[in-house]
Length: 320
Image (cartoon, rainbow, N blue to C red):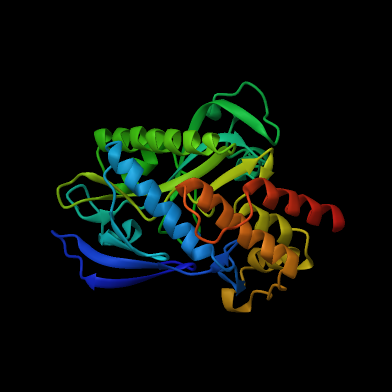
């Protein structure tokens, strides 16, 4: 369950048995931890659902166990469910099974403008050597090896962790942590190679895992979509990043950052303005065009990725 997809439970999960549910992907979008934005992007939910289903099917063939069961319709998929338990409430220990691993695992192949890495470097929370670099990176820099990063998942504000901290928080064993790292690299390789086949650069992304009743890892949520991953075409973003970039140019962004800094409740956050109609159409087409190219099917007969990117560049030029 999230701000852009709904969950219907058809079979309740228990301590020793997986549940079953249906993800319904909406056309809503969310940025900057604001929550659901005040408008929708036509086709976005179906694009995310179809891309995620395709990726699950391909990853299963590569030996990655996932919670995907089947695609029900364009914007609905059936999935296995696990329990959501909170380490901070003492609900997880090394004997716990059938639960969501309370971590987000990220892979970074390059450092595009907008990457949180630069803020962490500025604050001293991360060193270039952590990423295998001997110098301070610049936006757009490509890494020789993917940097696998980890953060909390079920806390009010996500925070980055060392792998030792991650193991302790998730209450999993050394071999399980290593298996998650291996799977993450495999998933990253798959997405990177698929993106390259379409002329796209895969900059970064994230995955989430669970531990099954049999104490085995399982890939959950979704992966390899324009919401979870940053893709670029000729160094131009084709992902949710374009929405972040647009709103960063509006007064609302500064007001929102001030409200967050002041610690006001979400209900008192300033309300964002609507997207210009042209930008809304570009963002909608971006999701649809990448989905069609990715799964190899024409669903909406959308413009090509290159055509959408050219429209986006024209929009930026007109609205400097």
